[in-house]
Length: 80
Image 1 (cartoon, one colour):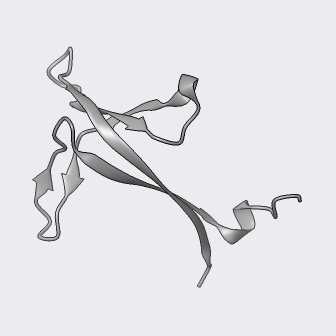
Image 2 (spheres, rainbow, N blue to C red):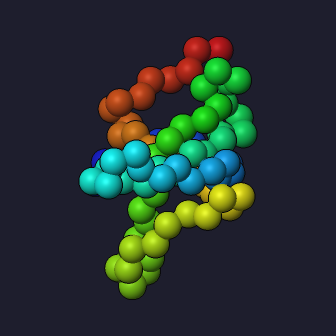
């Protein structure tokens, strides 16, 4: 089993963006609290799966946890 390195961040859903074209997915714009100003917002497809396998979506104003995860061999020790 490969060990994973991870970092957890907090974010908030700024807004939900309706698709311009009907075949495109709805997007959620997330403001990442600890990100640099120029890179604070990210947009992701607004589809989640609950514990029963049902599809759900995020609401504007919702607080979210953002997890960045990588295999140990994809990381290096931070220099002092």
